[in-house]
Length: 137
Image (cartoon, rainbow, N blue to C red; front, side):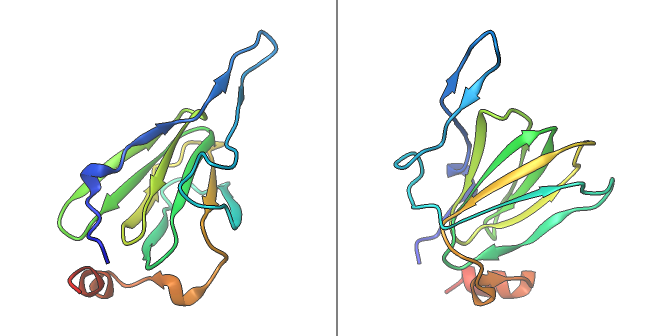
């Protein structure tokens, strides 16, 4: 497995069409390096709660803050990086093998996730010690 480093992960600009009636952003086939197999969203996250706390063995995910803001803590097993998502025309592509935690959700925050795979529990690494072992192989 290629060793993904967090310094290679950054926000990606989503095309935006500006109009006096409101803006429109589009993610369509070919924008992401994978076909979208699952779409889900996080919302009504209570103050002080966090989501994530896992890595994926195979799946990639693209996170878009549709409303409000939240922080994504990325960890490649050696280094950590925090990215604030707060603009609906900027998303975060999280490749395989990166531990992520989402926290500091503002009131009304909505996080849309475009995933490269269907839900498969065996693809999740939910224990940090197991993640460190996975990264060392």
